[in-house]
Amino acid sequence: MTTNPAFEVVVREHGGAVLRMCTALLGPGPDAQDAWSETFLAALRAYPRLEVGANLQAWLVTIARHKSIDVLRAKHPVPMEQLPEVPFALPEGLDSAGLLDLFDALNGLTELQRKVIGYHYLLGFAYAEIPQFLAGSAASLRRAAADGIKALRLAHSDVEEQS
Amino acid sequence: MSELETLKKKLAEQAAAAGLLDVSYRLLDTPVGSLLLAATDAGVVRVAFAREDFDTVLGSLAEKIGVRILQRPAPLDAAARQLDEYFAHQRTSFELTLDHRLSSGYRLEVQLALPSIGYGQTMSYRQIAELTGRPAAVRAVGTACATNPLPIVVPCHRVLRSDGTLGGYLGGEDTKKVLLEFEQDLT
Image (cartoon, rainbow over all chains, first blue to last red; front, side, top):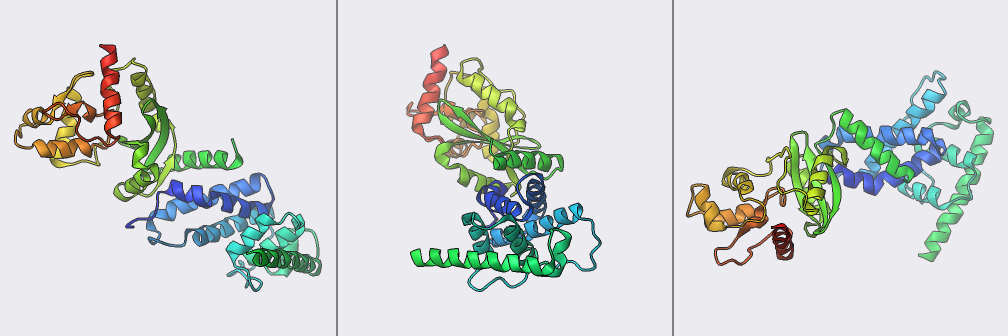
């Protein structure tokens, strides 16, 4: 292989996962759709320079993370001193692809749990920063995330036991 | 249309408006199966048969032209319409802007000469070799026909072996036979 696949193939293989990630973070509708479009336009611009054989899903998840943050900021123009840095360490036994799969698999999470987990673990916001986007205190949001993670862990272990 | 399909369509339009596409393509259903039609800014660059495997064709376009390839029918509307007309016996030659960048040298020369074989006519590989001023290059003519990136539109199916047998074809010998018989129906 001397080049990466045609971009159409990239969209076909990863478009669904990116849309599910944006939807999990931003809720269904125009915000998630905007983040998806911005993600793939930015990816298309950079694609010819991407290393051959690069991990396309990881690359797209990184771009989608930035574009989701942009959408959140545009909706909540509260000045912030610091940009979120690298994502926080994921709970043991989960990587970001696994977390996305679990988002898909789990309708049991409430929208609040889904968003808090997404904002914290995928977008890298500290709990103290999240109240600017979601109603609640840092402590209540942390508790929502912990409940959600507990549910994810339960579903995750169920999957592992079956396999 | 699903949410994802709508988003993909919008992406292709935005990408084209921003000048980000190397190749646009679409699929077309025809009596010889599904065809992939691809175009650059310069014109129609590739017509491919399903048996070539469309993902393989896209991979080869990515390698030879550029990786920024998306499905986008608009630039291929004229090609699709003319092929529909051809298969409906309403058209005997194509009026399309072609991008010949996938061929070069003698192969290109041969491919440029092929449209001089009229609808419903055939010529031998030897006759094309003579026509292009290289009477000894019969095998090279065979290669040029077999690697024609724009089959049907550039009518390599109208070139046969001197003994009248079909010779190879990107779309398979059956397809070549179907096209030749199809063109005879009208006359």
